[in-house]
Length: 326
Image (cartoon, helix red, strand yellow):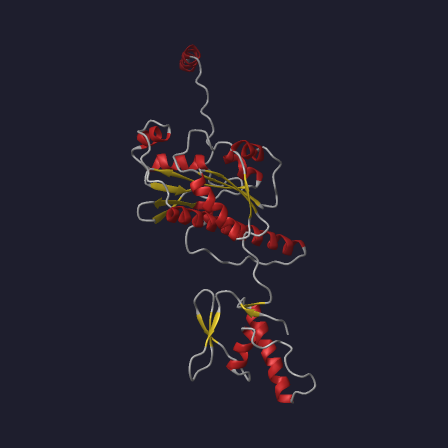
């Protein structure tokens, strides 16, 4: 019998006069059919109060041997459903490198959040980001760049970084416009939403597109804040980290499916769908005044073929005259 313990977030509720109930990490309550095993024995086993090899071998009665085997089957069922684990879970960003740059009021909390989830956090400069965007594509999907600004995005600043997804490098960013901070969709592969796409979509969605474009271009009065506080910066960093975790989990699932298909196993995918918008299609607006945020779906903007060059006026007239001849 393995030394499995209850998975993080899971617990067993002992209802007086009734069978024990499992509260899953997702908050569901499931009745447990313990069979011949007492609820107390199952609880002791799954909280670590009773070692899996406890008892004296050879000194058990047939009934005790049967209960031990039944307890082992129960524990295996818990493991199969993910309600028990034999080792501490791996941090979700373990094995990932997250490069962080931008304004310290945001990069500090961002680095702490990503590091707490297992990422190897490293600083990076804009020039180094441009070098990454020119590098050979990374097919492993294990590197991310997070750029945090406490201001509007200067024209052209993120143009080079928008090419990171073409190299399979995750690209995540945030910026502030007055009282609102924006966290843009994570882009991790060709065809994902980039900062250029977000700007085009926002311009198309507002009747004040000329004014918004002028604001971005710097035709505005000096910034009066409010700047992120410790609380709002922590919220922004947590939301960005959640997007990184969603990216890492999707990459891990894709790797597992590829490995399974390589040996001829069809996993069929998990079939799980997130309750909210996916990280690669989600634009958030965070109000720094009351720490509320809204989510908005955003799609990439397809490339448009350039218009044909106009023909010289004389050519058009001669062509028209020729067509007019009988």
